Image (cartoon, rainbow, N blue to C red):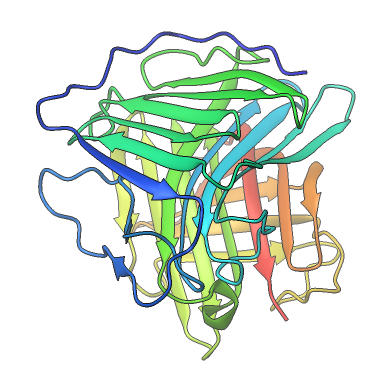
Length: 332
């Protein structure tokens, strides 16, 4: 059982708040998908209207990894059709995947979903705040100041069906209050208007923190063989890299089982390296795989120690050590 402390958040402002109610059934026919971010909108807001259909998906992802132990937790809120993404279908589009690792190495692998066909997904949001609840699942989250450096999220789980209870607090101004008090947390938002397996061949995505550096990387190939990359690096809280340009980020496996491109039948790679092109030098985030959180034919979620170095003229010889969590899709 997870037992975590909750830091209370203020209520959402009501003057400009909007509420979207999703019945826990997919819709027939076309869906409006938001792809253009408008000034004053909330990146965490739902992107599918009136709801998900057979081939569209929307998800909210949270993870936290201890800086000193092997403990970690991942929580993903899904809304999508039965063939839209590779997560399990639970008699409705709304579900929550809960995965984690305890200090003794034992794993949490649970999915929370409502058994009530009349349950709804309720999402209330304004420009800077959001609350989401999948009714009947026991799972919800709130976020405040989401478009600012003061962002704060609280994920709440009260799920007798899975035996998981507790809260996870992500606070950008201070240490998280979790099973561990020295962790690194992460949240993102994803959605799509086509079946995931029809578009993606494979990808490497991950994030890490070491010394003054924090980074997120993404390197993917689509079904036509085109490579798509993006990356974001902070140093001492300042952005030193942000790009989606071709070649600006390269992520590749190394060591044992480092076949590239990755194959569904191949074992866990020894590690990966994410190289960011800063123009005058390269920044290398090198991860050694320590723990396998999820080991599936089409999907791996892994974590391990991180080493960050600079390469190129005038680069520092200093090596920064930290932690990282990353994933690998390798679809047939």
